[in-house]
Length: 320
Image 1 (cartoon, helix red, strand yellow):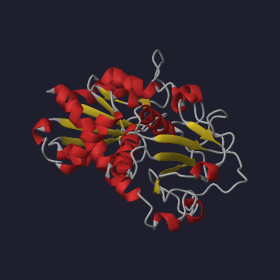
Image 2 (tube, one colour):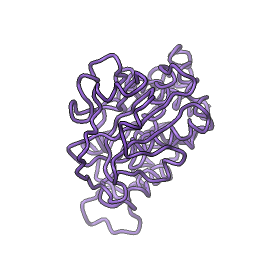
Image 3 (cartoon, one colour):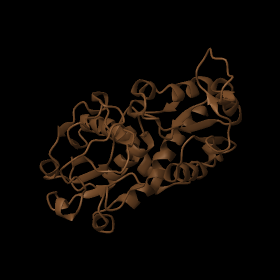
Image 4 (tube, helix red, strand yellow):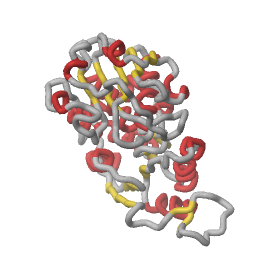
C-alpha cells in the first residue's frame, strides 16, 4: 500500500476489517516490521483521536514517531507553482514535503478544507502535491473531502457489534452551531456504499433538504429527508453534522428536530449510536444517549488504533 486516502485503496472492506480485528487480538505480533522505521505525522489542523491513536498504532508496530504541527511550528506553505513568493508564505510544498520524506519512511497528513471554494477544496491540491513530492507512502489523517481512518474504524466497530449478518446502518445529519466540512460523512458514505456492495450492510442517509452530499460518495445508498422513517429497523445510527455541498459551506435553518435522543432511538431496532467525536452534547446528540447503553462512541474511538495499525502494517510490508 503506497497511500491510504479512500476506500479505493483497499481491495476488500471485509478483508481489511478482519485483519484489523486480528491485530486487535494480538497488537504486538508485528513489531519487527517497524523496527528502525519512522512515521512522521504532519498536522495543519487540531487533532486528538487521530494523533494519539496513530502514534499508538505505530508504536505497537515498533516504529519511531515524529509529530510536526505545521499550523504552529512550521513555516507557512506555498502550494501554487509558478508564483513569486513575495507574500506571507515562506516555504514551498515541493521542498517541505521532499524534506519530510527524507526523514520519514511513512508520512501522515491532516489538513481541513477552507469551505470557501468547493472546486479548490475538492481538488485535494495540497494532499496530492504532498504525495507527489514527499516520495514515501502517505496516510490521510483527514483531508478536505475524506477521513478514511475514521471510516475504517467505523466499519470495524459495526462488524464487532452487529447482531445480524447485514445490519441496517443510518447516517443521520445533526444540528451544529457552525458550518462543518463534508469529509467525515463523505468518507463514511463511501465506505458504507462499498460495504453494501460486498453484502455487509444496508445503508441509508437521512438529511434535511439542502444537505445532499456529492453523488460521488453516495451511489447505492438509500437517501431520505425523513429522519423518523429512516430510523425504523436501524441497527446502527451514525450521527454527524455537515454543511451544504451544493451551496458550498452554507448552513440552512431546519425546522424539524434532527437531534438524536431516546425518543427517536425507540424507533430503531435498539440501535447502537456512533459519532466520530468531538461531539457537542445536547446539540448534535443527547446526553441521555451518550451516557446510555446504546452509545458506542468510546469503543469506536478505541478502535481508531486498529484502523491505523492495519494501514501502517500494510505499508510497512510493502517497504520490506
